[in-house]
Image (tube, rainbow, N blue to C red; front, side, top):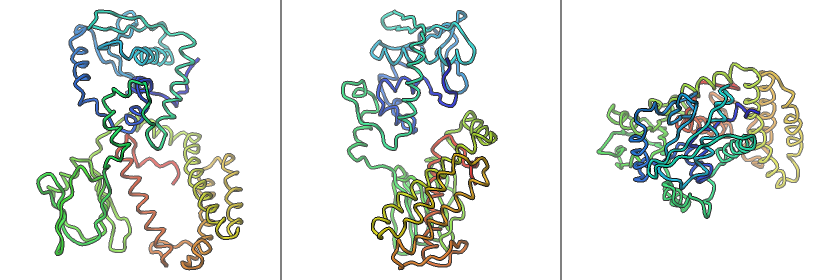
Length: 396
C-alpha cells in the first residue's frame, strides 16, 4: 500500500491536524506564532540539550525533518511531555510510512520524554497506513478552505499558541490592506512608516498595515523608501497614465523553495499534468461565469438562457480536451459568449460590442481591462507570499 504521491504533508501538518485544525490552516497559509511561545522555547531547549551526541534534524525531500535516526533504523523524536500523545504518535507513523514509500523497510519510532526520562516505541500497522491516507486527505481539505475552521471545543487548540491570533481574527482583527494612490506626489520613509505627500496633502501609513501599494499617479520614490518596502515584503504595482498595468516592484522572495520550483516545472513539462491543471482554471472560471449569468437571467426574463446553454455545452467538452491550444480555444469561446450578454445585463446602458483592448474603445471594455489589471496584480501579490514561482504558466 502507498499513499498518493501528489498528496504529501509535513510532520508539523500531521501534528497540527490533531492539535487544532484552525492552527493547521494558519500554518499552511504562512501564519505561525509559535516562536513567541515560552513553552515552545523550553521545548526547543530540551531538544538541544538532549542526546547531543546523536545526529539530529535529518531533512528528507525538503519535506520531513527527523530529530535523529540511529543505525538500527529507529526514528527518535524528543518531546517535552505526553500532553499531545496522539499527535506525536501519528507524526512518527507518518515518517515511517513516508520512508516505506521510498523503499526503506523495517523502520520503527521512539518518542523520548527527557523530562520524565521515559520513552515509547512506535511500530506501524496496516490499519495505521489506512488511517494515514485519510489524515493526509483531511489535511488537504483543511488547506483548501477559503476561511480558517472554527475553534474546536475540548481540543488542545484552546491552549495552542495561535489561539489569541485566531480568536482576535474571528472577531474582526484589522488585517493588512491594499493602498491605491491616484494623485501625483512622493513616497518616502519617515521613521517606521511610509510617508505619502503631494502639494495638497501629507500623511503616513503604518508599514504593518500595508499589503500592497497600487500607484496610478506620477509618484517619486527614493531608495530608502524602496528598501523599507522590500524589507517588509510589500509589493508595489505601477500603472501608466491611461491606467494600464506596466510593472511591479517585487521584493526579493523570502519563501524560496527549490522543491516547490522543481515540482512546478515537472508539472509543466508533464503534458498530462499541465493540461489537468489548466483545465481547473477554465473549469473554475466558467463555473463563476455561469453563476453570474444565472443570477442575471432570473432578472432578465430568461434573456440570457442562450448563453448559459452554450457555456454549459462547452464545459461538458473539457474532459475530452488533450491540447493546450484547444483548451485556450474553449476559453475564448466561453468568454466571447459571456461578453455578448453584457448589453442585456446592463440593460443597454453600457454597450460593449466586441472585446477590444490596448487600448479599449468604450467604457465597458475599459472596465474589463482595468479589472483584469487589478486581478493580475492581486494574484501576483498573493503568489509572492507563497513558495510558488509566477513565471511558470500552465495555460497561457
